[in-house]
Image 1: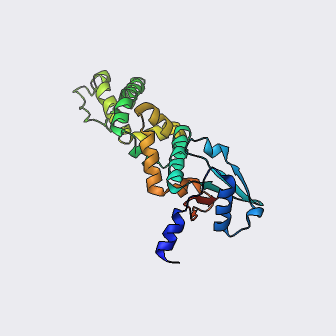
Image 2: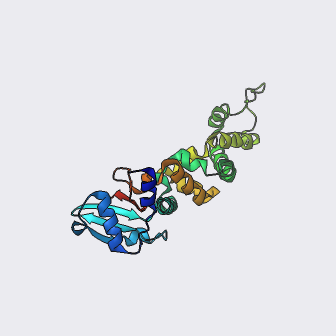
Image 3: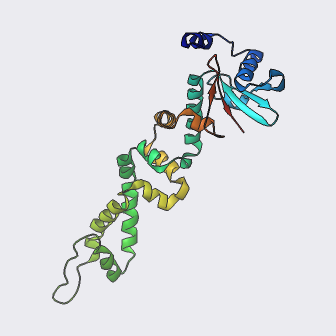
Length: 231
């Protein structure tokens, strides 16, 4: 078939609201008899508001069908947005961090981290305090009688250094405290541009990565519908 003929075929219009027509189109792409296939609206995916989505089945095999690559792309963004809102911990730490203002996160955490450090330092014995302090400040020398200065005069300086050290990587700090919930806490504290993050994820990995989880592949029919294996 010539390129011009293929383009003409691609431009043929099939009404995506017509289930029978969609089924026939999909059957042709799958090289199956339409009589052997079943089609129904996938209300779960349609509920994302990015157009009608169908589920086509052949026995136990199932495919999902969207109207176009653009529709699948928008659907993937909607799915990723939902995942970011409900389960941000399933995403790579570096990806989450790239969309969080870590400077703001560090600033917002600093006061509490410093205050906790001060409280811990004030509960230490003099010997324990100075042993800790020498990791963060230049410790003064003993006086002629072998005594150290009053530790209270140095608590704030040491606490500030401890806070700075702990917050060099604020995401790592939160992970030490919250584990898998660290990303959710970071988002709560510093904010997060979910729309931009969802778009970045889909642009980077492709919409198939988020929708075609069976094998990561998709097919396109002559009218531009896209389908992917569900199982």
